[in-house]
Length: 329
Image (tube, rainbow, N blue to C red):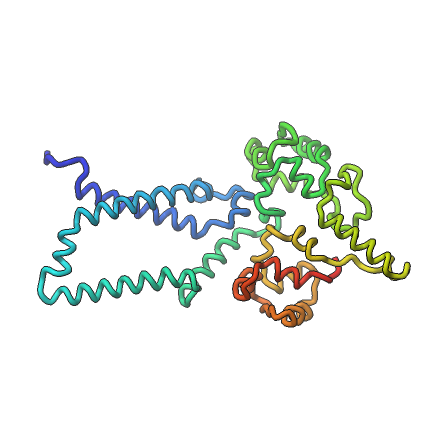
């Protein structure tokens, strides 16, 4: 048997190659994984591993590949230098290849930031794959990281009576320790997804718009109602005070900036196109486009709010404010 040190060229070469394979596989998982809010809401897995587990694998194998790559380069530094400058006539060709390789790498790196064609096609394809996991409204959580809230906190945010939710879940055969258990814990303990748990109690939701809720429900004290609702109630009182009784009685409740933030921020609205937003909220798309153009924020029908906001140098919620403020609820 050949007597050689434990750490040698063959070992380092194998570690470099295998860590590259593992890093590439985890990179593929990172490419196709849905957005975090969807992955955690639906308990998404790939080859039996969750989004978090694939992310951890990608980090650790990338570190291993980096260490092995540096070690491999040190082991082969002399042959590399000899290759570049040892043979007459080869040096010019080798440096040319090095320049080309560097330019290609810089192009792919900078192109990811600037979304330069054709790299933007790869990024668009990546977005399409991530969004394709949302096949039904139930796959999209009502707000970001909803699964991390306790049942009590989740019910409060969704205008559901916590006692009714507990009864409904237990009647459906779902074991719940108490109202302080998170939606994620309840789902995991019952081999369900957070989305499954929500679907059981979704029917208990009370209307969240003031137009359908003139007074706070008995189970939800007025003091805990979100600012969007109480602010809207103040807006309604102002309308009534400054208008004739006939007008005040028929004046529809309209969105304010605070109401837009309260209702839509953190709920993935940025991924939707302008046409989809208008259809979902029953808005006249042509009129909304005119409204945006007048505010120097022109958006195309098939352009997502996120892409449009990036192009215009704002955040998606600001575009949504321009779209909705003043519109009837």
